[in-house]
Image (tube, rainbow, N blue to C red; front, side, top):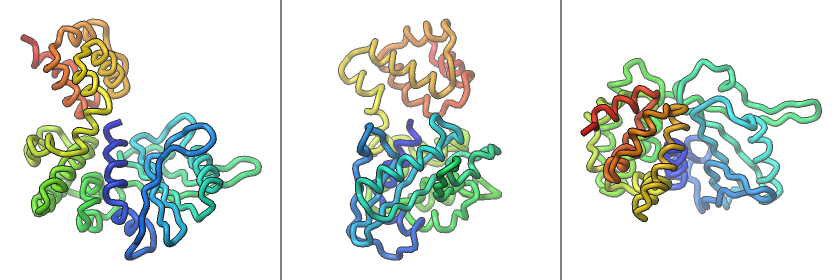
Length: 282
């Protein structure tokens, strides 16, 4: 969920940047970020940006995986119908795939059945020219996943661009978002080398990601609740956790659980968790 939350934060914090990138509008005005709960059954879209003067909605969906249940194409049709009913205006839908994959599903851009056909736009970030993303502060974190023959050079360019941002809060937030999304492509050691961890800790998005789950349980002093939530996050991130590994996690202190909650953002397989636990054994 960290990647979804990060992208949603960027779209809500820098809506004009996304609108200029994805719609033929040079200077969008009177932008309103809509609530993401739609009528009928309560479902949520990743980001809804409403251009009040142009009577348009830009609906963004950020995906790290090509498959979902229900399928992405059907969800886009469902969102479209609900949005059209609720707002009665033009709907522009864009699915942005974050992580490179060979799956044919990332080339699907419409839903079809016997009586219905619904199209939407698909962007595969790894095919995007990084030039535009590098030129707009709000899109810098997405540039980490764009097209390049030299990923390290690209990441260094992004770090340099963020370093030029003078406003401290914006710089901290963009650093945090960049580090989270870069985890889909780069080794954590390189990310830590180029970006200062202490700066990330002070950012709004970093705190939001933490407070969405584990941090909330720790703040209230409920270690058992934190363990349960951490278990769910780890299962979603790397799959089923072995019983002996679960026992190791249960022996961790509150401070160590907090550290693990932060570290799991970088995990991609079970061995990452095993290595982390081995490094933190007393």
